[in-house]
Image (cartoon, rainbow, N blue to C red; front, side, top):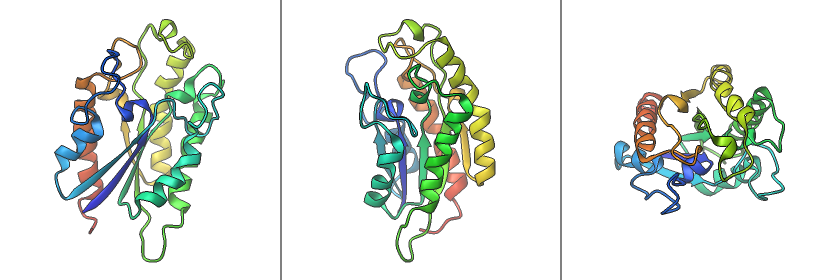
Length: 215
């Protein structure tokens, strides 16, 4: 069995843009759909948290710094064949004043953590797949979140080419999340249709990346 860790934010957690229920069912969320698509030869581990950033500490939502918890997840779920990193949306919050290149550096820190982590004797370093964020809705500045503006939306749209360049540099996999997922009425979180499309794209990429790798 090949193990896949899905490490992301609220769109990995499955926050429902319609509000109720607050979370999409497991069978709707993209990690759950990915599990169904890949079958019993794979174990998909869902690790999503609303508000999670790459490296930034949020005083309004403490405990969301992705760099802090990633080593815990790697230790808890090893051995892993693939780590999927799907972060960047929350890095675009107005409070951080982070440029797209700085956000990309944050993603790079996570990738370095995966590469350099001490997995133990005989345990291989997992492959990495990075997914750039979906785009925000046109009215995100007026959304209930109150921490995004038009500039946040522009930053999110600029991340895909920078993430893709980073993936090439690290010889890792890359997917542009905005090609598959799209925000619902809350301007930030994916609809069920977006989760389905993203899961199908990720499944194809996983098979491409791990097809020749022995369990």
